Image (cartoon, rainbow, N blue to C red; front, top):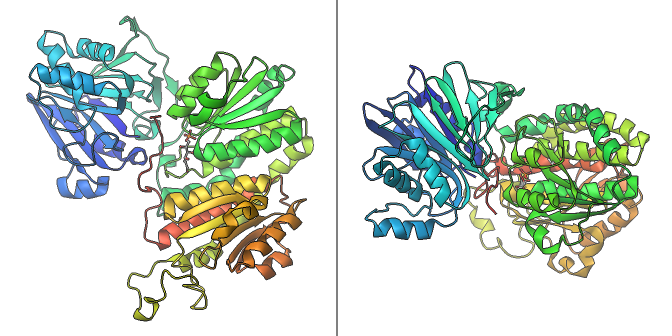
Length: 621
Ligand code: F6R
């Protein structure tokens, strides 16, 4: 949800580095982009609505003079994506520039007051108040740092912000509360940024800013003030992610690169086994209930976690959406372990719930981003080892979350056979990836026709529209995914991936639930993805397959090599090693569904890395 970067360089022109860094944060927002630098007493500003590449080809964003500057990519909250609403925002005299990520909840009352004092607003954003507030405080004689402190005292909500002024050359002042901000300490270059991929190319030395702390960057380095305005030293940690990890490395999109990295992500996360064991040893015996809390894809990983912990460790386990936590988590006590799953570790809903759970219960965070807020607030942290994930739709981080959960559940339940099975998962995933061309070819059938042939026009939109034509799926606007038990959680994640990046309306149902309502929708226009791994529920899901097939649905079957019944009854099948049973299925069966979503998105000429309306890190509630 918006990305910000600030940078001070000793002698070099900052705009090319700012541009390069902010490009790495495009996954956080792509409504608009802007850069501001300053030199010779003047702020240089370039900004506009649109994706980075579009705006850059129009404005040449790297062409700005000055050694210090700030940059922003936006995911609009207040005000539509437009040039005026884009960041950086300036004060009226154009001597101060600021960028902001988050929401200023009390901006309307601040705006009213500032307007009554003669300030004029040009944008519809909540952010603009910050530029005018700094202007107001600086006009009373405060410097930029003191003014930012005053701003913190006035604004409410979630924010990470960076400010600069022409009257204090080569200085950037930044602060945060509830939105992420890291500080990069290079040899001759000093940064603030929303996330590490922005700066890894320039420095791996990172400090994490806490709520209410202020960092001041200048040519000499960085200095910190705590929430009481006292100077502090902060620990500088070395980030072990390599800058290449945040590059496409020859792939057309980050998403397909990240799907292809999943076997390695599983291997790397399995190497956390000793760490997981030490946490399990510490809490075992002290807990008699587990509660998972998460959003989106991480919630789907949590659902698998519920099945696993209940069946492998025999401990009652619930799952809650983080945004619903406060409405139903009344039964927490000190014998409940609350597990927070979050790729980013910065999701606002999840962090809110974590703060509440900390009051009564032990908390464990399973997180991919080192040093993120969840890791600093939970009692225990397990890091998934997926490396940076740039594609907005979660793939390798999801698989890695699952691996961490499988490790946790098997160690808790002392199920050595599952631990052994986990070692084979990377090879099963590799097998699926080797066959991705099969899915690519099938997905191509979902390509929309640029021009609809005349003979199709009268039939399109009617029931049976594509039946009998050439079995293409190009008119598909709705799709169902069904599974049972572990496979139901796969269905949920498969449907989410498809809707996120292909905009096909996709819903997942537990196979047994279809006949209680949703089957009313089934006709030949709604293909059904049936997830049918070997295991005790296979017969039952095959009966559900029959039910939808009898109503005309095309079947996309995902099952085991040798499952002839599935092949016979499906219109398209993708087959997986038959050793992958229903318990292991979430780790492997999701891969063809991720690939299907990706290739359908590409076939429909969409950008899978930047799905409309979404952002990678949701820092607002
Ligand atoms: C879907 C997706 C989102 C996230 C959700 C939680 O592809 O990425 O649904 O899973 O926003 O994000 P984290 O895991 O960062 O808390």
